[in-house]
Image 1 (cartoon, helix red, strand yellow):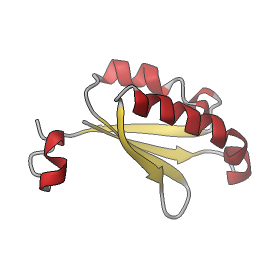
Image 2 (cartoon, rainbow, N blue to C red):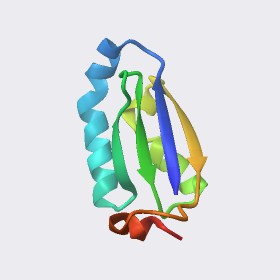
Image 3 (cartoon, one colour):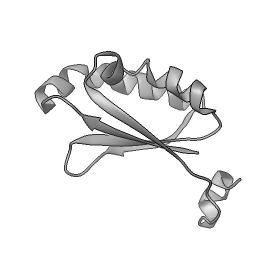
Image 4 (cartoon, rainbow, N blue to C red):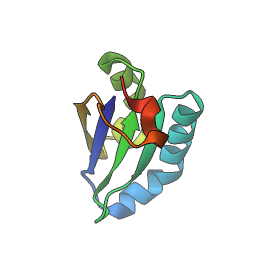
Length: 95
């Protein structure tokens, strides 16, 4: 599983111009089963995506398609972790 930590490099006004295409990118990845959760950071300086089932190289290729990354609007940091304990509703995340 990966935590993708996205940090904006540009003002929010610029992010807003690409937000709809970013949401379309996210929707496609949810439909393909690549993403499990995503959302904005508070304060709004970026976002977080949870992904499972891909190796790092596959995930990096997918993230290259994100309009925020493709247009150099944000920095992407990947952290891999193996969930060993979850609530019962999230047992599917354990390896």
